[in-house]
Length: 111
Image (cartoon, rainbow, N blue to C red):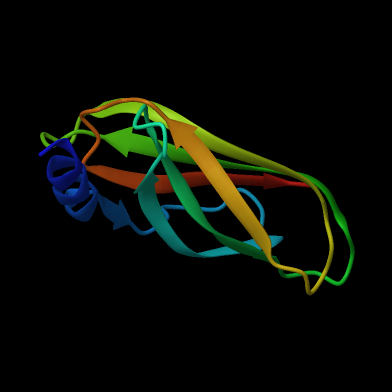
């Protein structure tokens, strides 16, 4: 019964397209929310691609998390280092808030 509820919850969480990107060095795509194997939390997973032909030393993706009413209930962040041009970065942004029904990429910081 718990697993069925978890699957339903994940299918109800939606992604809202990014409002703005602080830097145009990374393109983020294919995001989704998955439950952790431990059953204690979730993570936003996806792929980011460098849009430059130089290595990105460090990057942070920040996602706002929202509940059913649209209130912000938290944030999730993914950090990466030494992101090479032409090599996809498969990121993970962990969160434990149980009331999350949607998320939005609100900031990309890269240098």
